[in-house]
Length: 104
View 1 (cartoon, rainbow, N blue to C red):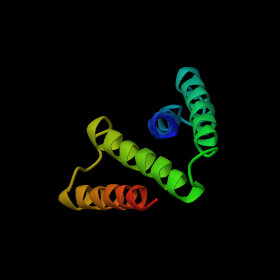
View 2: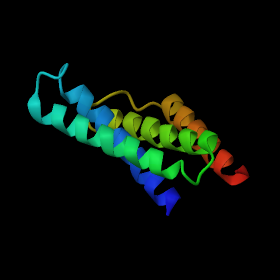
View 3: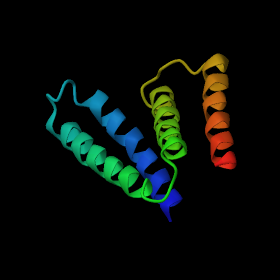
């Protein structure tokens, strides 16, 4: 169950990072509220997961999901460049996260 909560918390990290960019410096109310709610929920889920998972592995998985998810959001929704090099780098992050999970 801790891994499921951790993955959901990592997805919420993508939500709050994306909402933060949409908030325009907290000048737009709805994205600002989405940011705050997703941030708190993401941190609560991470903290709950850390009760049973090793901190190093759990944190890397959480950050990896958030980083890759946010980068993909930027490419798909915001029109950021979707180059082969970017995808290779994202694959390297995923590979590192999976590797750490497998050895933990």
